[in-house]
Length: 562
Image (cartoon, helix red, strand yellow):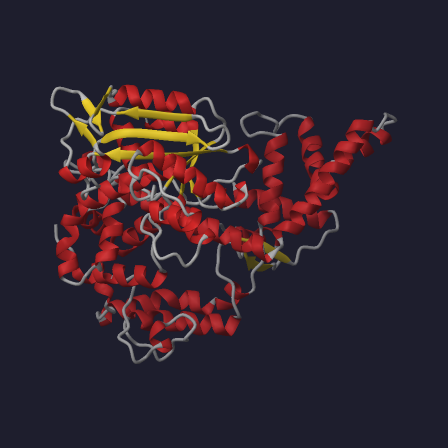
């Protein structure tokens, strides 16, 4: 059908006096043969450059001739542009796309492939001189908008008008509507003219933008990302659709886990930084963080810097306090549920009550930024873990816009200090002392230190990060601790570095998953999976290209066995 329509179209063009010398398109039909047979004309064929790689005629022919020998380890005809052996002859060359990265050896296979490529090599000239059928594809698209295939316009008198309208739109833009109205004695339409001028201006801007090198690079990057995403999804999903798969009694249908993203600790940007509400806060706990085990909270305190409004709550912990924690904080939780501070009895809240009160107190302010000293390593992980255990972490993320770790802030504001402990900074910067490890005194002292820096709100926000990033990092650390043991054997065998094994484990993959990926799609499956973007827009396994290539090569050479 496509060939018949093509012959008819060229016949009509010739009859109307339009000569046809070159025909551009793909090589998927017999149109050229039909033109010679039916119309007795010889038209030059120019293949579509969107379907075939373009190049110099002689160079393309030489590259095609080198292609088969290259796969069999014969590099005499190769060019350094595409052959790694020619670029580094001193290194052992490995074929990325061949089994076990080794060249082919069967002489009969080489002979058969050579015969197969003879036709391609002899027609190198056609593959070097290419055109583009994009304009034709665009015209087809525009015609289908005005004459949809789902509706039968073939026998309608309006079809010719619809096709002519399409041609006028492509060549003239939307001005053709006003011109047609004027010719018919109608008003061109004030709004129609303005709309046509606006769309024409947008069209020219768009055409100019598409020709920019940056736009072309972006298109190539997006195309590569789409290919990686599709390849990785096919690998992770397993067998889903394949001819005859319904007859397979044991298909590989296990879905591998989605990527777990580490925290993205990039600064929070507000339209108006002065609208941010700065709140210093501090926690007292039953212990320090021990590996994956988080301590329980014994006191939450906070102060809003502008108004001086304070919050304080003692919390009854469910895990025992260490002696060091009792000595430092002077908070003692008794077995009967009571609590004392410096020997004075205080009334503790349950963690549910204390958390609800704290969130309600912060909810009174707009664009809250929590500031804690060494908070990224201790206070924020402890607070978010505790809230996650009682299903209130999302409520905090809705109220708190960002978090700040004041230790990084003070390193910029007060460089060269002997110690950046909060009490040492208070002594050296403000020449004073306070009751350290009393959460209320801590947050008030921290507020004075932050105010003393005289940094603008914009400068303060440059040290901020979202509470969501803390949650992501907690999940990432949990996955890393859970999965690393399965990859430890690869570290011991020098197949993976410890750093790379931790990144792979943190992303949610185990040795079993790597084996499944290798079984399904080999080296390409590994590469696509590692490069797949997570929900933070980062590669699943973030590393340099050199480290990625080395890791994948080691995993392929190791031939992981299930």
